[in-house]
Length: 338
Image (cartoon, rainbow, N blue to C red):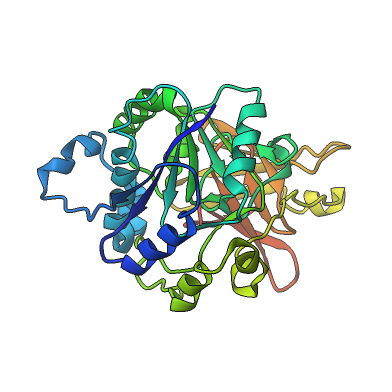
């Protein structure tokens, strides 16, 4: 495969970010195109086609202050792909908080060309809490299944298979709008993978989606991009963006796992029964509620992650040190009663 173009999304008000990414990409041997970000207004009927199935209900309920930004981001990621007519190669889609090392695009393309699986989208170096060892496909390559925010957060660098763009756009038009670019991960409609290189990252320059989250968008960052590659990459300001880690979770003893067993209740919600199913290889719990069961993996002493659906469970202890309840979805508090 080859890169047909690099397209980045940028709000008109963020002219300093536009300048930064233009300077960053000035030497790449690919066509670079800016696409304007979307300021969503539900009264504007030009957006109606993207809202065929509306928005996931909890997005409206829990994140009213973020609603417009999330929908605008969702629409912008569709619009950046709609004009593409090529059906060979890949299109790189960036957000304007993207930053990378000098050889990132060459090395990333080599990884794509040696990847032996069919794919729709490859996400490079997403931030968040991942990657999780249990999702590893091969070295530095992960399959996120149905996981999304906050475990795999953001999509500031996408390699999109041009052949699959019609499928991707159709999948988005026939899905509810999800938070944090989660169309890449959730629902099983799009075949996505995560590649970790440590050579690209997201800059801490604030968010157009989350009001009140203001990073530092400074002239020093822009001036750093004026430096030649070798000097730029040696500067502490540039190097601070990059990191690489893997969340493998933890292994708990049988006694520690047994403490979570029990019966949990929450007003107006299905009761949960939790039992220990640990084996010699891994610590695991089985949570059963509302005719469904999910396998839970410990990510810390009290935090668990479901194996199939994007659900996190945070257990809590009483002053006596006994497990007393669990918070599901960061929203529903269950009490342990037996």
